[in-house]
Amino acid sequence: MNVGIARITLRLPDSHSLKTRRQAARSLTQRIRSRFNVSVAQDAGADGNAWQRVTLLVSCVSSDSGHIDAMLNEVAEFVESSRPDLELLDYGAEIIRGV
Image (cartoon, rainbow, N blue to C red):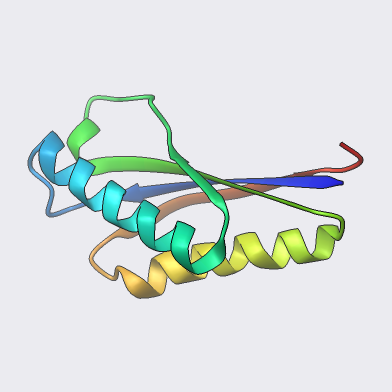
């Protein structure tokens, strides 16, 4: 089995409170889960602009590492296309083979 993990960091330029950030993160998380059947969590780390940044961690498991790579890239593309009001600041993915 192979495990894929992606970190997607987004900027919410119109967010001016933690409540707005949480609402956007929760909505996006639910949409990703329902569309791709992957695990999604919000990174708990916070910085000085906590209300304008959110980091999502996405993971999936498969016997085919090519499928994992394609799935994680598709999730990142979905985030960009479905929420044009958000800026994709960083995207990184890692596949752990032979778990």
